[in-house]
Length: 451
Image 1 (cartoon, one colour):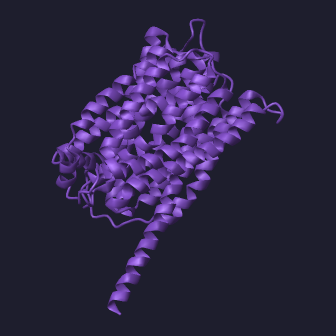
Image 2: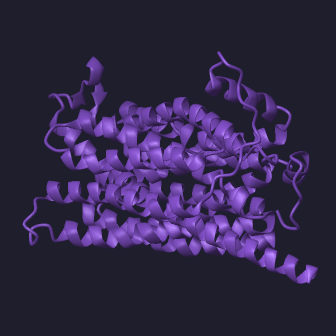
């Protein structure tokens, strides 16, 4: 009887864990449409065109009196959004640690981002400042929400399941991105038959991403559950966010190999995030490709990223997550190098480039997330994933900044895109030097057979 009771309890726990994991996948399904339709496809070229319509005779706009080349405004806005996220994430992470209530904070961040994205419907004419402001709010809110979302991973999946669970989450996200892009492609290419201008069609696509984000965020918010916090409350009179950030940094200094992984991830992920946000600008401005071609290319990326994420998850079971990530960084370097030589006005070669990106995009991100989860000391998930998210999105301002400055200095998007190779090369070298097994042991976690 006792054995049957234990088995029944284990079965119930496993069923509850799977239910929570399925709910967790749906936040990727909800928010990835923002990353795909807004950040990757529509907003870059559209906001650039809005900024150009407001520019002076020399091609400059003047936000707050600062001369900025219109072609760099989008990249600078992305960089500023990341700075805002860096300032906000420690405060939110501290609140999650103190209270153990991640769900209300996740809801607040998700719906702030969804509302700002929906508001992009009103971006028209020469309202480039409105577009920049909405981008900053939406992108910062997405970063905060992803920090909270990622911190659930070590709580809902045991070590042997994390590569697979993380990969499925990314696959869900890319599947949603592909589905919505198909609808966007129909609306955008057929906007005249729907009685819409090209601008109105783009603004509807932007706003629909916000509505999608808000609607499907309800599923994880219903299924995920909060855990009681083990973190002691901060003394009265002390700024909890700053105190928590300082405590996290002090604690992470006791885990130098975890810090070494974060440094490597900061570098190579900065390159990944910049490619995601600037690829459509490169395609439209440098290669002279139309919006329909760009949408089709990103749709190809989404479809192949689903297969790529799941395939790289399986490769990690054979070769280990670290080796698989290193292989993906080599592929990123080769792909960007090829992108520099793409001929203008040749959509076929751009699709080949998109296929290369899609095959490594989801897997490199998913496996980085699951690998880091092994390096987090038990009971410190929220604060460590706050640092991870600062490395993921929160510190990903150097890439867009370098991209924007390179274009501003040279006037060439080819030079801007090839400058990003440095992030993948340096990231590869730093990651190769991290003793992952020792790092997992030092964190007090069991070492998987393959890592």
